[in-house]
Image (cartoon, rainbow, N blue to C red; front, side):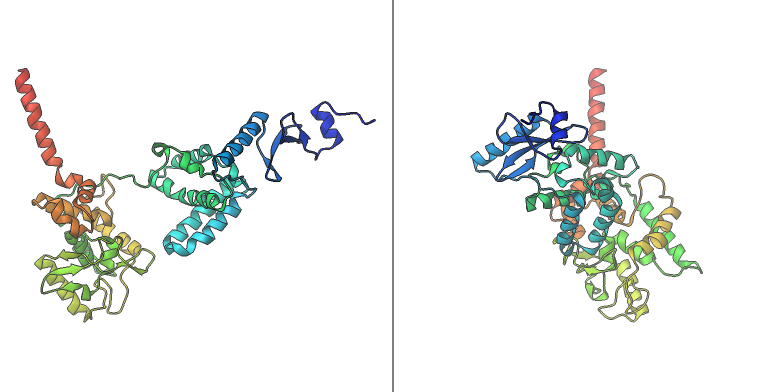
Length: 398
C-alpha cells in the first residue's frame, strides 16, 4: 500500500506537477522546487491562479462568487504578458492617433514601458508599480507633465486589457487623482510688459538684418505677439486668409510640428476672426508683394509655393535668439506659445476684458481666458484691494 504523503516535501517528491487539494472545496495548490505554494481555484471548468496564500485564494474565490451572485461581469485574468497586451493596444490605437502622438507612444513603449513590464503578466501590474515608475521618472528631473505623458501608453494598454477581458480593472484608475501625475500642470509664465514685447520684435528685426541670416523671422515673431495666434496657426496662414481692406485674419488651418496641414486645435479656434493693426496689415501687404503671392501662398514661406518654416527651426533660429537678445532669458522659460501671454497682457493692460479677448484667442468662454491669463487681468487690481484693506486694518490698530 502506497504511503500517503503528509508534508509538502513528501508531496513534491511523489509528484512535482500535481495539484494538491486543500480542505476547501475548489481550492488547490502546486509546489515549486523550493516548496513554495501557488494556489489555484476551480472556476467555470478551469483552474485559475489565485495567489501565494490560502487566505488570498479564498478571498478571490469569494469575490468571484459574489460578483456572479450580483449579476456583475466576472473577469478572470488571462495569462497575457505586458508586451503582448501593449502591442495589441498599439496596433488598435495607432490608426486613430496623430502621427506625432503615435511616434511618441512608440518611443515611450520602447524606452520605458516594455523594458520595465515586458515579460510580466498584465494581471500582475498594481497601482504601486505605476507609482514606483512615476517616482523613478521624476527623479530623472522630468517634469510632472512629461512623466504623465510617458505613462499614457501604460494606461492605454491597461484600459485595452480591461476591454478585452484580460483583467478586471485598470490599476491606474485606482490611484487617487492627487497622487497620479497630471498633464494639466500649469507652468509659470512670464508677465509681459509692452516694452518687453517691443524689445523682442526689435531684436528679431536686427537678427534678420544680419548678412549671415539665412531666413527672415521677424515678421512671424511680430505676428505672434500682435495677434495671439498659436505658432501652428500662424505658420498655416495663407494670404487668402487675410482681408486686407477690413484688417482681419481668419484662422482656417494649422501647420503642425510634424509638418502637416491640419484643422485648428479647437472648434472655437476654427474660423475665428483676428483684427489686425494697420501697421501689421501694411507689413503683410508688403510681404505679399515681395512673394508675388496668390491666395494659397503661405504667409511665412521663404518663397512662393514653398512650405512654412518648421516649428523647431523657427524656435531655434528665430524666436529663441530674439528672446535672449531682448534680455528675457532669465526667469520663466519663454516659448513661442508665450507670445499669447504677451498679446493678452498688452491688451488687458489697455483695458480690454476677457470677454473681448476670448474669441480672438480661440477660447469657448471668457472664463477659460481668465483662468489661463489671470496674471493679465486682475493681479494689479487684487494687490491694490489687499493693500487698501491692510491700510484700513493698520489704521484701526493705531
